[in-house]
Image 1 (cartoon, rainbow, N blue to C red):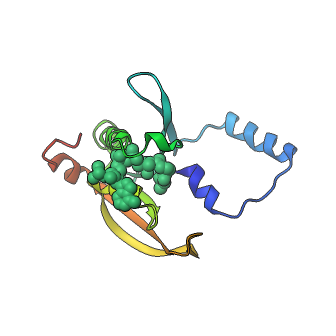
Image 2: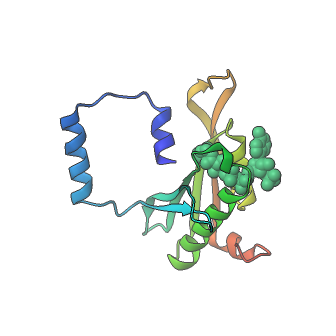
Image 3: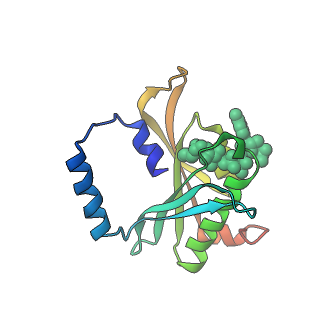
Length: 158
Ligand SMILES: CC(C)(COP(=O)(O)OP(=O)(O)OC[C@H]1O[C@@H](n2cnc3c(N)ncnc32)[C@H](O)[C@@H]1OP(=O)(O)O)[C@@H](O)C(=O)NCCC(=O)NCCS
């Protein structure tokens, strides 16, 4: 989602020198508030990635994101399965209290996927851009799931 979030913003050109400088900075000081995992099918096909970002250990929460770039992988349950594994890891293994995710109203697949994972909508605000390229009104939706909600799910979360 990090990449997509940036894609929605106006693209700022940077010089090769500036790009190398930023890359080097990132290499020297890896982020402690974000982490990304790649998603492979059981047959070994690489289909995308999930990540957490804005991790706040003190407060016990983080945001999560997902991207399956290729259309032929959509609608097969991969997104829900990958996000569920990540939520489970964050809430059980890392001991966070709450996991959040955000998308926009036009991303119906992601909205449905988030709901299937047990996320509940907590806020809805106007998006930076008022309308999508299809002319639909845009709103930013934020979802949340707490550890107790996750553990209370009939299937134990996963
Ligand atoms: C969004 C994304 C992660 C979802 O993953 P996925 O594997 O396609 O999702 P799933 O198959 O687990 O679930 C998708 C659900 O949305 C439903 N859906 C698909 N298109 C829909 C539409 N236009 N309207 C309503 N529901 C729709 C599917 O039917 C399915 O629900 P169901 O299981 O009840 O039938 C994936 O499609 C993706 O990475 N897309 C591109 C990048 C992106 O949008 N990332 C998220 C940015 S916030």
